[in-house]
Length: 304
Image (cartoon, rainbow, N blue to C red; front, side, top):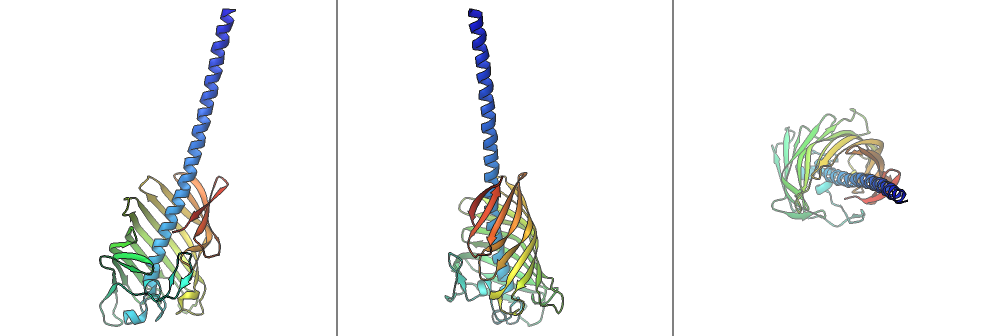
């Protein structure tokens, strides 16, 4: 009888141990899935921050107006965009018509009209607020020719540049791919070795991107930027200081409206440290919300 009790006790302990081990494995597996899902959510936030940062760079390079430059260098003649535009956006993406005070200085070399390449330096000095953001340092763009002419390029780099609490490094190149005589504008935008660093905590993100913007609305008014809508296709990849690496492939073209500071539509497949998710920018409504879906579970994120 005693032997039977001992066998029962040993058997019971073994079963309990197996059940406990199995439970631990399940918990570890669940934690791993949750951590992987959160990693994809976090990467989608990184992606949206980088997207916004370099959309701003594009707007500034394409948006310099002829009155400011002394000749047409950008896309829109005498109408400005970016830091050269008259309008700004409020916190919910609505355009405001409050006049924007230009707190930067502009240097153009050489100053002779029609002489290229031409280097344009936007200098925000030690820091000033413009268009709802505090900026400092320099944005430097070299134009091979007027950007509205097919074949021209605008190459932007940075010198001590920061917007709000983020420093910006890297190289941004716009190439006008529009067919001569066509009224549908197409440009290639390449971002190389970009790095955006949060000065508050030292966290950084890197980014490389090669994409094409095709104008799908506003082609009949090439010198008026506010009715422009672009479809954006192509790939990107990034990493951050937490050891996260990701790549993104456009599944449905991203849609950017000039009258909205965020992407309003489009789908990107994100692969983050070997795990996959789907980033959906919405139905075309101008708002700062997007959805990241991982393992069939959607989560709303806020775009920056």
